[in-house]
Length: 329
Image (tube, rainbow, N blue to C red; front, side, top):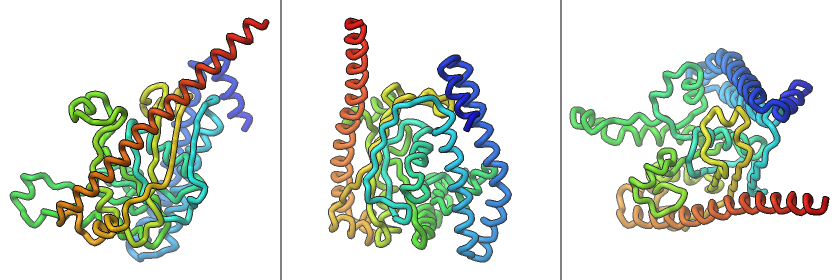
């Protein structure tokens, strides 16, 4: 704790040095966790896969949560003072089963989701590329934690082997089904990629802050897990000072952040239709789903405007207060 206080003071006295020390401390914690958790996760993960042991599965989840919580402790104790405005519903809990949709601007987004989820939401999983399994420690951890891993097949591969058609969807459904017996938060970045202005312009996106949403991943999750889901949550993330890169988080450069999590309701008839596998079979269901997502995205776009405006008004109020104080002196 004393070291954390010293780093906090360093950020005030020598900001450049403070950023370097924060980044070094965070790197040390992340690397230490990776090395320290790697062997236990491998052993327990292999035991889980071979034996189906629920105890091993729970132990892997516990290690992963410790890993994430250690990273969160760095955010709380090492980074400089920050204006992070976070809102979550009061009725979410760590034993729930949630589908979570989000806008996507930076690699930082996932760390922010993990940060706001601590002691409030179950461990977050998200759809990943199967190729990530070859990344030492991290890739295997994703696999042992039942992250849905998508193995994409190109049109050329399917043309050579038609049996591959639909295999990626089948595998993703199988992976989603593994979550049924445990609490989960399954995160889906509906835009499918990180936001950039060039992507926005190329799409001719009708939204100010967002790319067009893609429906396939969420439809797949509803079909695989619909009967077990406690609700669908929508998280909106804004960075008032510009979209950060990953190192910005650990240097303490993200001074202002807005996060809003809320429940969203999908019409029951539409939810049932998707759960019954009609998203791919019935064009009307697909159109209704896209219309619903468009409404959600329009609301999110307006919410981002409002959240950013609230930060701007705070800066203006602060500047006015300083001016008044100066005049009264």
